[in-house]
Picture 1 (cartoon, rainbow, N blue to C red):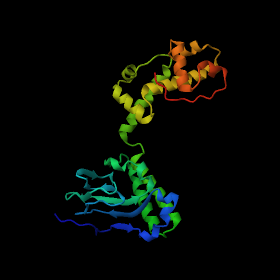
Picture 2: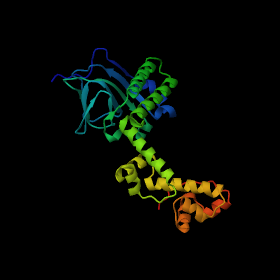
Picture 3: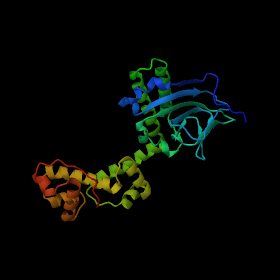
Picture 4: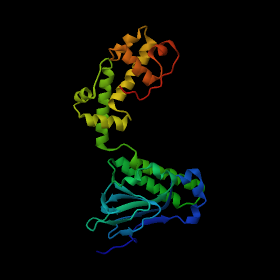
Length: 297
């Protein structure tokens, strides 16, 4: 198989001379995330690169068409149109274009203190589900080229850092795809059901049955999007409602307890104090601002 490292028709790449950014890399807005190389290889037939010891930088490869393969420490990943992959620093790797359908790729090498906040060590293919997201990522790469073709100034390096951060956030953190939309719809439906039935006691089994979903799936979407279990979330909104009732109506604690699904006022008082920080009676008679915590039954 014929292989080559570079030299593709209409390719673009820029390698920043070390002396150009050594001083700038000390700036707080630059040292968090900064690139060292950026490029675009179109229709890169026979493209091949191997580094047995890895390199200091993280490598981001974004495939805009065709197909290729990335091997990181004996794991093989296939990436194709509208997908990306990050190779962590100092990891043995090689990557190469498909012989049948060679990839066109944007790529960037980068360093920085903020890398630890992006899950680049997960070794996973990042699929881009929407055309808008794809367009944004290609636009970010174009911005990198445009800025690097100008002067190497501190302002430009700060700008580059922010663009690179946006690109990584688009890939790793922006919710995307049909699955997330479905999960959000399920979550919204369950939360509406909870609010309509605050006066009732509910178990996870009953919540899942109402939504016609499995308990494990309901647990997953709540922990993923609400950062709470379904029951903790339910307790949270029950205590919020109890706070409103204690302040807005002239009723006893026992009556408020029933309104939010607790037959035992003493048990309700224990949960209320655990979540809010004060007893229902003290809250009703005082001037307390509620601090909702992760209460558990």
